[in-house]
Amino acid sequence: MACVTAAAALLTALGTAAAGADGGDWQKVGDDARSGVSGLAYEGRAADGEGVFALAVHDNKRTGEQRLSRITHREEYDDVSPITWHGPEPVDLEAIEAIPQMPGEYLALASRGIVYRLKVTGSAAEVVDYTPLPGIGEGDDFESFALVARGGKLAALWADRGAGAARPATLNVSPLSFAPWGQPQFGAVTRRSYVAAYPTGEGTRHISDISVTGSGRIIVSSATDAGDDGPFDSAVSDAGRVTVSATGLVRVVLATHPTVLGTFPRYKIEAVECLPGSSGTLLGTDDENLGGYVRTMPFCGA
Image 1 (cartoon, rainbow, N blue to C red):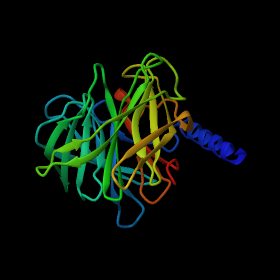
Image 2: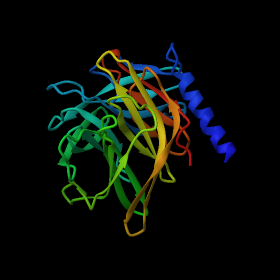
Image 3: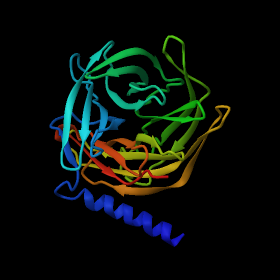
Image 4: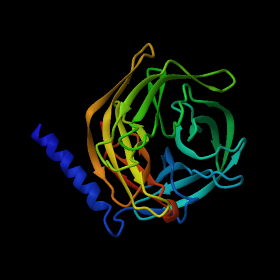
């Protein structure tokens, strides 16, 4: 147990140190509030094995503004290229996730709870269909979305982000299927409250994104936002576990005391994406007027 505690403390220290005054290993991918990273979806690896392709959503609201981009992330630099959006334009996209076993298809989530099914081909994204999340409540504000596939069964996780001590995040988990015409269809919803261990200030967004490891660990980011010019603060934590049975039954258990894996002062993490086959975790920030940044950390693993 002492070894586990020491390892967690080391990861926390690494996360804090890496987000120091010079930005550490963060790489800039946007220069302003229109180009921050609100969500990331793993797309694949570069042919040389040294780079990762990921789709990034932007929380833009006006007609014609960029909704989706492709980031090529490497240790030395990042390339960003626009993806043209075809179909009904969303307002305030906050998350995106690849659909397992459906190459080139994704679900993207807007803050008010509209889910868009996309087909991405080259530099274009086509809206296949869209639908609201089930059970949207008054004041709900969604920034996170993840999918889990086990034995041919699929489940979705999403959360109202919460706001400070008065409003914990509400994590929702549901079986997911698709109608013959492509529309996402959600089953019975299980809900759990979640309070971030860090940060803890007024207005904390307890869950700003979600990813799930291969073994079912739920990795979440949490953040505070004092305005378009900051200051910001955020962390990545191990929040619990989700399982999907052979019959499609979904079970989620959240930690009473989430383990903080890393803290990142001065950055507002809104994207967490576990990279398949490794402990690598791609992180993205939406730092409003200060732009957007990405980096990797070893948070996912088993």
